[in-house]
Length: 438
Image 1 (cartoon, rainbow, N blue to C red):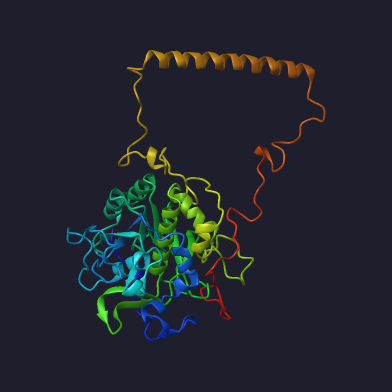
Image 2 (cartoon, rainbow, N blue to C red):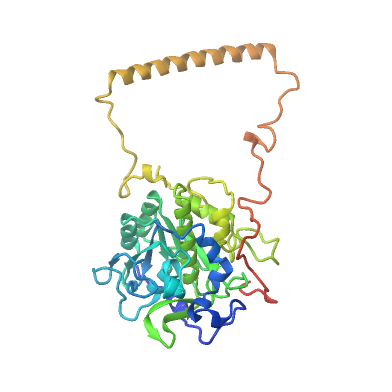
C-alpha cells in the first residue's frame, strides 16, 4: 500500500507574513512564542500547573525528528527510522513534518526559562520518533514498533492514498488497542467528505482542524468518523530547515491539529494514569465545546465531531470514567483493550487451560459451590410455584423495567456526550461573520 501523506502538502504550506492575534505585545516576548496562539487560547500556563505530560511517551509516526533542535533536545528518544534502519532522532534530508509535530507535542523552548522558540502543549512528554518512508511502506510495522517500545499515545499526522486498510494495518491497530495505546490521526486537508485512513479506522481518534475563532478550517476533511477538532490554522512549529525566522515554519493543516490532541492525551495520561486509552478519549470528548453561535448543533457533527478540545477542562472537570473502550467500538474476537488481558501478536483465540494438576482443595471448593447453587435453584422453584398459586401482588405488573423501559434505563436527552461549561483559555472569541467550512 502506498504511504502517501496527503496531509504533508497542506501542513507544509507555509503562510507568509506576520500574524496579529490580539494577544500579548510582540515586543514583550519572543516572536516565535508569540505566534503560538493555541497556547494562549488554551491558557497553557494554567494547564502546566496541573500536568506537563511527564512520564508519558508519545510516538510520532512521521518523518524522522530532529532531536538536536534547540526546542526539542533532551525530549526525543532514539526511536527508529524505517527509512535508513538507524535511529529516528536525526532529520532525514529536508523533511520537516515529523520535527514540526514533535515540537507541538513536547517542545520545551530554549533560552532563559525556556521562554524562546516553540513550546509544546505537553513539554515534559517524551517523543518516540518512528521515521517512515512516505512512498513505499504502510504503517503496520511502525505502529507495532511504537507499541512495543512503550508508547501510550501514537500521533499519526498522515493519510494513506488507499480507500481501505490492509489486513496488516488493521491488525496493527487492534494490536495497539489491546495494549491500551491511544491512536490519534488526522482527517486530511482536501475539504472533502471522503474518509482517509488511518483516521477513519474503528478505534482511531480522528481529528479535524479549527481556526482561532473556533470554526472548522475550510480544507479540513469531514465525515461521520470525525471525533474532535483542534487548532490547525497559522500554526508555528519547529523545523530542521533554516529560513529567515530560524529553524521554524508556519503552516495550516489537520496534521497540526492532531499533534495538539496527542499532546492533550499525554497531559491526561500523566494526570490520570489509571484511565484506559478509551477513557482518556472519552474525557476529551465529554469536555469538548462548539462555537457559541451554534448551540443547536447535533453531535457528532460531520465537520466538528463532538467539538474542539479544551485541555484545561479535560484535566479538571468531574467526568465519569465510563467504559474502558470509550467512544470506540469494542474489539471483536474476544479481544480486550485491557492491557492485562491482551493476548500477544494477534492470537487466534483464548487460551484453554488443562484441568490436570488441579489441587484437591480447589476441587472441594468447586463441589461446595455447586451444591450451594443447587440449593438456591430448588428454593427459587418452590417460591415461584407458591406465587403462581397466590396470584400477582396488588397493583399488577408495573411495566417492563420501570421508568425508561426495560432495565430501568432513562436515556440522556443531551445524547451520549454532554457539553461542559467553559474554562480558562476557552474559545471562540470575536467570531467572524460567516463560519468557514460549513
